[in-house]
Length: 326
Ligand SMILES: *[C@@H]1O[C@H](CO)[C@@H](O)[C@H](O)[C@H]1NC(C)=O
Ligand SMILES: *[C@@H]1O[C@H](CO)[C@@H](O)[C@H](O)[C@H]1NC(C)=O
Ligand SMILES: *[C@@H]1O[C@H](CO)[C@@H](O)[C@H](O)[C@H]1NC(C)=O
Ligand SMILES: *[C@@H]1O[C@H](CO)[C@@H](O)[C@H](O)[C@H]1NC(C)=O
Ligand SMILES: *[C@@H]1O[C@H](CO)[C@@H](O)[C@H](O)[C@H]1NC(C)=O
Image (cartoon, rainbow, N blue to C red; front, side):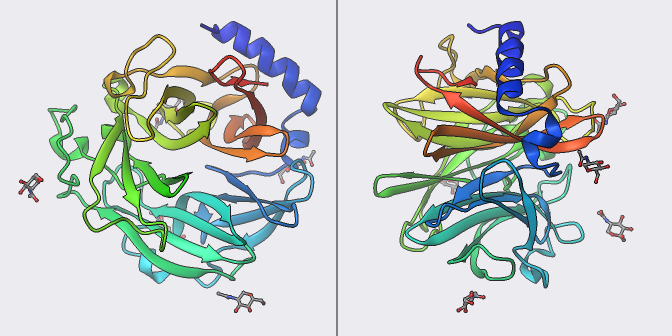
């Protein structure tokens, strides 16, 4: 298993090859929970957490320009769930000339949350249609999935939370992973004709841990060669250089379960191999997404330095069967 020290050296070495520091890496852009897409013209888009969802574009994947918001006039259907219009952790997929954007509305520490879908043919600010709600959760709703209640002292907070969607397209089948902090990561079967869940879609558990109140969220499932890789963010986001996020993975030959880490521990049993954690002046990397670009799989995430929170971009090498940040 790759040690943290090795990972740190590797990451540092390649970061300095690709970029000269956080500002050069990011085009000096400050964001949380990025998701990256590339349109047919080759233009890059990064969508991220913020009021109305932030859109940044780039022609070279290095220098980013803030273009505007998905919903510059607001998104009233989210108001019931969000705080002051702040929308979380968008997930983009560019398919047949259209952007499909899943995103969540929630507040910290509450299960009252919802996931929505938007579409656009251009990706431009305001040029989006609201396609509907995927699912919502409340303090009285645990999706009726038989999840283990891991915080017995406070069972209400031990349930699932409808946040952090990520779409996996696997041939003709679509899956949305989501959730969930306290009770881990779940998957819904999605109807490819409209991007919404099938009426009878089961909620399938993909991963869960018990340490640190189960802190796990921000899932992204990426298919590469013979495996599905489930990336998750463990521990805590969004506390400056006290943030403890770290990116963990497992893999499976099925998209809907059987994920194990490099030591063979099931992800439903607390498993998760470290891909990227705090190193050097990079603190709390997480909120990640994976995109297949012309030069291979790309990991995008946010991290903290004493100067703020920044966009991180690294290539991933899957040649060993387990992704390594390069
Ligand atoms: C990056 O942005 C911050 C905040 O706007 C600014 O203070 C800083 O000087 C910028 N750094 C560079 C290298 O442009
Ligand atoms: C919403 O915005 C108002 C005004 O800026 C602020 O006072 C309040 O704390 C915000 N609420 C949340 C939950 O962020
Ligand atoms: C998006 O922009 C195109 C071109 O300007 C326009 O035809 C279309 O109606 C817009 N769609 C939305 C949803 O704003
Ligand atoms: C939960 O699901 C089980 C099995 O599908 C079903 O028997 C039960 O009635 C459901 N409970 C609720 C509250 O929907
Ligand atoms: C943020 O970090 C500070 C300093 O380590 C700590 O005291 C505080 O509890 C943290 N807050 C949260 C919400 O984790």
